[in-house]
Every structure is written in C-alpha cells, then in structure tokens.
Length: 423
Image (tube, rainbow, N blue to C red):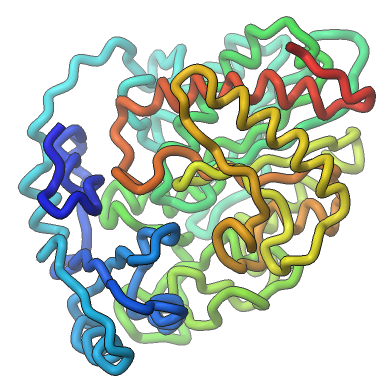
C-alpha cells in the first residue's frame, strides 16, 4: 500500500479504499502538520474553534484548518515560533478526487427488506443500522429487545439493544456505548459485529444482561456521511453564534460530572461542552437509561467505544488522582489487552485518560464511575495508532472486531461478583 511521501497522515492517502459518494468536507479545509515545542498551543487553537486536532498522540500535531481560520492560525503559530507544513491543500477536492474509485462486491447485503447480519466489508449507513436492529429484534425475540430510549436533537431514535441472559441465574449487567463521536465509524461497526457473537456465546457471558447502544449520536453520524466526514459533535444549532461551522456539542463533554472543567465553552470548538450538563437530548437519554439499568440490575461495567489510538482507558479524565477500584480496573483491563493482542499482535495501552491522553471532563466513563459508582468503567480507543486515523479502511472492521471479541470474552467473565476468570 502506497503511503504519502512524508509518511504522515497516511489515512488520507488511503481513502481510495472507500466507495461512498458521501465523503465530503467543507471547501478549503486543509490538513497541516505542526512541529516544534508545541506545548498547549494547538489545544488553545482548538478551544478557540480555529482548528480540529486529528492526532493527539504525537509530539507533532496533525490539525484540520478551515479556510476562514487559516490566516489567524498562521499568525498564532508564528507568534509561538512554530512551523507547519500543508499535507493536504484542499480536503474537499482531495476526497472528491478519490471518491468512488474502488468497486466493491458485497458478500452480505443489507436492505430495508432484509438485513440479517451487520456488514463486515463496509461501514453501514444509519438506515442500514436501523434495518439490522429491526430484523434482530424480530429474529431473536426470545433474547433480544430493541427499544428507543429517546430522541436526538433532530428527532432521530437512539436505540438500545438488550440481550437477555441465556441462563436462569443472572450475575449482573454490562453497558456498552458506541458512536457518540460521529466520525469514529469503526466504533459502531465493531459493536454491531459483537452482537451476533454475544448471542452465539454459551459461556458464562450467558449469565449477564448486556445493554448496547450502537449509535449514540445518529444526527452527527448521518452528517459525517452527507456533509463533513470529520464531523465530531451532535447537530445542535448554537444560536449564540453566527459563525459558519460553529454548531454542535461534544456529547462526550456534556455528562454532568465535573462539567466544563476540561472542555471548551466556545461553540466553535470541537470540544464545546454545551450550555450545561445533560443539556443535550442524547446524553440525557443515555444517562436516564443507564440510571434505570443501574437501579433495576446489578450494573457491573460500562464501556464506551471510540477511535483511535489503541487504548483502554479508565477514570479519571478530569484528574490524575486515583479513582475508586483503580487496581481492579487496571487488572481487568490488562486481561482484555493481553487477550486482544494474541490474534494480530495489536497492542492496547492500559492507562487513565488524563495520564494516557489528556485531561477531559464530562465523559461517559467518569460519570458512570462517580455517579453510578460502577466498579469497572472504561473508554476504549480502537484501531489504529494514526496511520489511517478516523477514516480507517473498511477492511479493518473484521480484524478489529475479532480482536475486541477476544478481549471481551475474557473481560465479561472476569467482572462478575465472583471474579471468575474464563480461560
């Protein structure tokens, strides 16, 4: 596979592997690489709504810069004696040029009339996800119940899949969330692949109630298909700003625990936390459903799936202080990471959000740990480590799902009341 000459941001060069006509970006958007003693400069630029940081894990930063912000960004970088190079001159033109060059033969089809399995060689549209969940609810009615837990800001359903225990004895419940950040397509794709595996498994996992939200941000996901492939937030119209591109709230900064502490108050920022904790119907619906599960079941674990970077993160995101049950969370996460590595050698790093990535408040895992007092609370950052980044090729769906399932089989049997380990 041919990469760009810089060896950086190869994920943009690999876009010919996609065949969607919906790949788009605002005209004039560019991708830059910033080098030097960066410190918090790019974070400050993102808080101001001037850039979108695409790579948080390296000393050099890869950022997306809109046409209207490019002069301001250049000036601020110059002030801080930082250099940059343009990796992609016009993202919209680049995506349009590369669009549709790969013709795929689907081994599985998914239509409104028949969608028996999640697609394994392509990312599913929002419609296809709903078609699959509808058929799942019918074909596995003895164990599966698919219900809407609420509506998004634009009125779309947020679906919850409840897989009931196979056994008579019930050890507890697990909550799995994906798709809260719109552009992280691999997360819902992997979780959808896990559903049939969970239904087929006859081990101790059958003693658990599994609750899955495969698409927590349906509006943003649809927008990332039709208008802006790298869209992150929901689709709230922020009436307090007249600037183009300043709509949306980062739903993973909107949970009402340590709200606003490490997030942006600027609506133009990719990490805008919203007007208040749970101001968004998506996070309100998710939190209400989680409270109900915690009340009615023994909620043992919460896992929020994202991309990218290959981390399994535990609280806190708002502090370097040790969260309750940290040794146990690390122990079980290490089991998951070790199992995930065996098949393809993929390395997942076990750490807290603040230590491993950056300080961030108002996230799912911190809220679940602090408010619901869930013993095991994690955020998983899936493949890869930056080669393709947010536009991970569809051929990564299957291997990503397989290795995650290897980890889940171990983890789901290790978090029960008896701390039983299935090997």
